[in-house]
Length: 375
Image 1 (cartoon, helix red, strand yellow):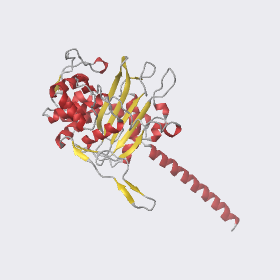
Image 2 (tube, rainbow, N blue to C red):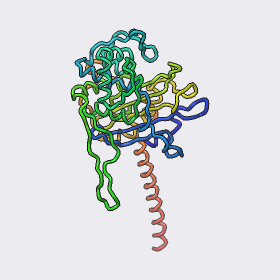
Image 3 (cartoon, rainbow, N blue to C red):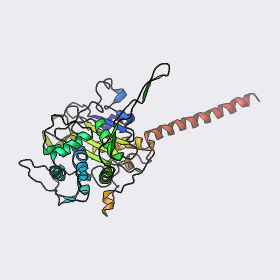
Image 4 (cartoon, helix red, strand yellow):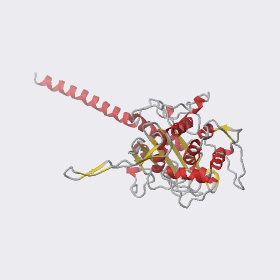
């Protein structure tokens, strides 16, 4: 993960002053809450100021559409809604508030799983209104998000007024990967003194947020995000992920963005990546959606994280496949980026082995030369 963040060319820069956008990523074990990897800013060890602020743990940014599974879809399923229920996807006026989809997309009614996978705003707000704003917020709180001073408005369904860190979002999404039970994220397993005596150990803290059935249905829908939806560019060949993307529009221009998120998980690991400028303004902003830059960065991280996990497969079926739709995994940037699909650790191992082989060959030649001298 650190290797990816050392490659600063992957991250957008401001045309006005050349400053680089910030980013942070977390990899977490959903079965325990253990943080397996975390990088808090771009540049890392090459940046003398890298310890000043950690965006992975201290960052408070709008989660955008990554909040939808937490405050809209999970509570809807818990209330009895079906993942195949058709939802409206044309603008609806709610007393002056009329949400639109990214890029102005409008379609006929779409099933819930498709609305989630494509991150449509219109059906999400409709569903949020149907289940009730207070119920949605209560579920968001169960998932560990802070709603203090957040107005009870329909915009909450799209992340309006809410802020969260990549670590918080990884912990929340671990609930889906862990069958509805959320473990508190932690870094330290135990502390020993100089004599080897254990003076403190981590005590697992967990709570059930949703049922196993709801968790399975959520995963079924979010598998579609990576097969047919907004995260197709974040895939890594050979692994099946579920998750969600999030794109936050810049306040001064709806065609530009302030924050981009990609969250992906398998039964073994939850990965969260956020990207955005420290302060978004007319000189510091992102272009496009999370399906672009953020997905590319995420795919690099997934390429290094996933090969170092057990590779456990999902037992639930992709909602698209269950509904007779064709799964489409063709949009995979890793095929051109990394044709041999090797992670950084694999490549490093190859280099080490090459050096060993060369050293061994050289030693054999030297040994042969010396043995000839002393015959």
